[in-house]
Image 1 (cartoon, rainbow, N blue to C red):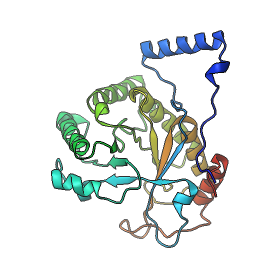
Image 2: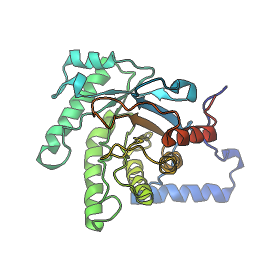
Image 3: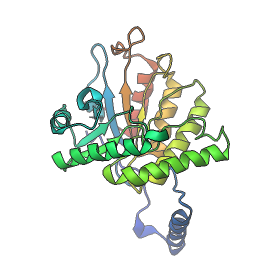
Length: 287
């Protein structure tokens, strides 16, 4: 059974002159204002990635339409700019596709270390590109810099503008080195409506700086602080929000509540997983 589904679109052969004029005006406005709609920009199928580790038997995620996303972290790359051997070690990680997410969260892109961190990321990404020109690279949570309170406007317009300017500065230096954006939309609070506002703001910002590159949102079905799994309706809202606005998702996890160094035990009946199956069925991804 085919496990990919293209997003619906209006064929250009049916565009009326009025529609074509409207689209041209919208493009001009976007270019002049720098504001881009927070919606998928391509007609490619909505991509499903997983970076899941669980304890116990679980479904074959590939049979449900997921591709595994390999993540290279300092556990493999080290704490400084990786040498050639570390890059090769990362490229040798089990990988079922050309995508690779670089997750280095200690190189701060804010404050006095910003210039140094940007240079480190540039050198690292260039080393990967040189070692394997076919690899599709992205940085976890850096483009844009994940933000909650400023992004939703809670700290006022000046703070919101400051966050946007930060993202513009970083993107001007790092966007040429990546093929896709991996914004992080993890769940910090129990307010579902507030999460939607936060997600919409971060995805819109990712779209603004992306220059048309695809946006794959990292989601985690656990609360960031307590590690409790999300209720089904909350998780479904997260999936559907990303389907509406982004080009794909990465489901990351899990972490056991009794030990942060062990994955959570797999529960087929968990609300978050049942909501995932519902979401997949609506994408026609279930076998």
